Length: 236
Image (cartoon, rainbow, N blue to C red; front, top):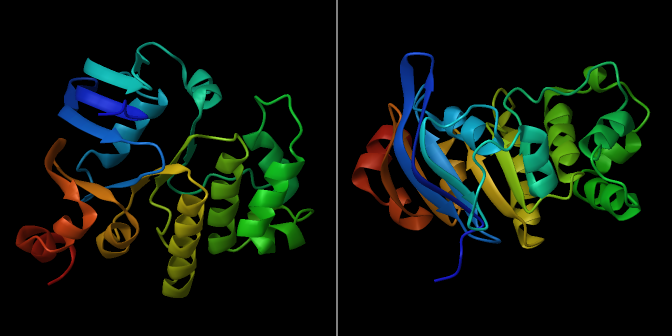
C-alpha cells in the first residue's frame, strides 16, 4: 500500500484539562477528498487544528508523507504543502482581494502568474473584484476568496473548515461544485462540513466524529447508505 499523504495515528489532544480528541486515526491519500462529519463539538475542527499545527497533540502521531510533524510550527506546515481555508473565512477585510491572495503566497518566492490564473478560473468574480476591499464582498464571495487564498500557497492538501457555513443554498451548491473542480486538478482535500449530504456526495471517503472519537469510517457512498448516518446526519 502506498504511503498516505496525511496520516493520523491514535492522535489525542486537549484544551487544558479538557480532552477534545481521543486516539483518532485517519488518512488522506494523494488526490483524494476525505470528509469529517459530525455534530458541533464533536472534535472535527480540533482535529484540523492539530493537523495544521495550531494545537499540539498530547499523544499519537501526525504523519506527512510518512514523516512525523511533531513540533513543526504552522507556517512551516504551509511550506510543506498544507493549507487551510478556516471556518468563518477570516479574510483581511481592509485589504483588497488581490492583497488577500498575495497573503496566501507569503512564503513563496517564485512566479505567481499561473496561480492567479488558476484562482480566477475557479472564481471569476474575484478577478472582477481584485481592487475591492475584501470586507465589502458578500459572504459567498468571501468564502471563495478564503479558498483562493489557501490555493495561492500551492498546497498538496487543501483543508476546508465548514466552507458552506452561513451561505445561501444556491451559493452552497456553487461552493461544492468548485470543490469538485479542485479535486479534478488532482489536489487532495480534507473537508470538515456540517452539511453531511453534500460532503458525502463530493468525498471519496469519510469519518464520523462523536465527542472526540472517530466512531465510523468508510467510503463515502457506504456511509451515505448507512442507516445510523442517515438517521443522525442526513435526515432520513
